[in-house]
Image (cartoon, rainbow, N blue to C red; front, side, top):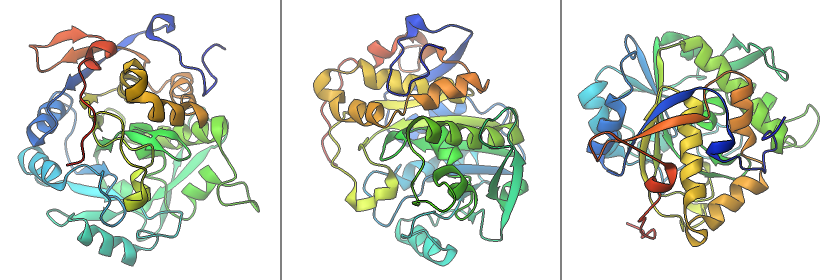
Amino acid sequence: MPGTGGDVYVPMEQRTGAESVVYFTRDLSAEGLIKAYEKVNAKIAGRVGVKLHTGEQNGPNIIPRDWVKALMEKDLPEAHIIETNTYYEGDRYTTEQHRKTLEVNGWTFCPVDIMDEEGTALLPVKGGKWFKEMSVGSHMKNYDAMVTLTHFKGHTMGGFGGSNKNIGIGCADGRVGKAWIHTYPGQDQWSIAEEELMERIAESTKATIDYFGEKVTYVNVMRNMSVDCDCAGQEAAPVVTPNVGILSSTDILAVDQACVDIVFAMTEQEHHDLKERILTRHGLRQLSYMKELGMGNDRYILIDLDNGGKQITAAEAAQGLKPFVAE
């Protein structure tokens, strides 16, 4: 099947199937975040969890707290941020460490639910080849809807971290689910990589989004895009990719694909490091496998919220970007 290799980029004109709508704004601010979210929040109701990567202590690249606070105060006043503990030993390995890190990083303006604090729950994986079920934080079942608020960036093993990685790794519990994704029994902690890792992440994600059904939506923030995940904290590689904007959709594949397309549409100088990270880790398999699993469409209509809802291409979204300058 063409395009299933995680190191092979398939341009839009070679993709087939239906199209989804993705919204785009260059407004990297609380107002821009709210504008993007409000385009895709029609089905968000009831008890809402906001799946956010809250980061290691003092990590410089996470989504700014004041943006998230403004969004939640305006649109999600009763929502909780939801997280799980990490599989690696660091600032968020235990619930106690995790809560300290949340305080250090300023996630104190609303309740934060560490979903695996009191154990795990199993969700079915429909149509998976690696899993029949996925272990997630037990508190996930306390929620009716989920807002996936993602800092789009590179990732040490996944190539890139978009909505798929935020859910697939971020909702799997820290001891069982994440181990199933990353490790063969009896082998090195990170023994699974490239295509198989991407497929396992996507199957984990599918378990969660199938659970929420239509009550899940996705917002990707393309800002401070190091080639490393926010798991790296202050050790993340310096950012050299330009800031872009904020994208939102009710289709997880479409929004992650659009972000990748914008990166690939940048100039060589702008995207060299991030593109290399994506390709060398075979990260594009996240996208092709999500399509195979029926999780969304890799063709989309990109709507420019800054220009009256005009339809644009990923290349147009990538035009005129300015080199990244640390704030």
